[in-house]
Image (cartoon, rainbow, N blue to C red; front, side, top):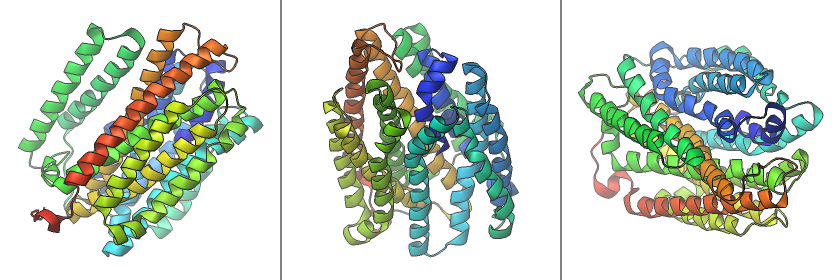
Length: 451
């Protein structure tokens, strides 16, 4: 909710703080990339000091960072506050997923618990725009960050009473060299995407890609040599684990980018007031939640591979529908985005279960960290990639900025950029459907060795 409520606050932030287009993307993305860079670390920390303890530490940090973001006086300070929120957020998600593994050993119970967990995530994600819009209408843009504070306080009160400690019997040692290489790999690729969108494919962007790629290669090689790696790359030798992780990341990349652009389309493209725009996000909220809840039922009847592959194909078709949007009204975009939400909600619920079930119990924290890293990195990359594509197309059509009172020319340029991004999302989902149908099988289907 905290992430997507910001989507509705973006126009007000742009009006108040006047960030550059690149800074605007960083305000949204700083959280996601900070989370993605630290989730693997926090999964291991949770195994070591206890998942409940880490969860409570993160809750306190998240509340403090939320207050800092709410009262940030400049776009630079807001970006820093969002990054601090990401640091705190990195402690929360792997802790919750690991605690689910601690609480439910039965496969059926665990699958239902993960479905409820994913439904909670998707509900917050989907309702965030509406809640954010109502909050902005009543107060100011900073209030959207304060929404998280009472929730974190409640967690600090009831968490110690209800949650198990969740400490691993075989905690791994943190390797800061691996941490640095992983963060550098992410930062290099992300910087290259944003730089290329704003300045074209120039030397800095190419250099960033090279640095990020080299850091990624060195990271993988280092993990193979360590007795206690930050990321056990051996997990990816399991085709089920590897395919589910890649599908999880790619599906959320498409959803995260389209969700951000859909919020901008409603407010800046069509000029709808925040509350009206928030109501048009409700179909996506409802179908995303429905997808998460239907996932276990459909998987039992049809098999997870067929369900995941089929829903990815439906999601690709729905993303293609977004290329038909115009300045006439939100109906087409709302329908297309709702179907993408349905598909991704169902897919990510099942891929999460695949990842958790494929990992051995002693790697529960690491597997949770990998799942959440894929999720947060996917969403952040979606905003960076699809947002940058939209920005690049828009800048190529007009030099006029897209604001609440933008000219018809600027609005039309945004629509063309939105169409290009939706087409890219459709292609990504199509590729994922093809890979999933071919490779995502149960261990009994191809006699995989137990990890």
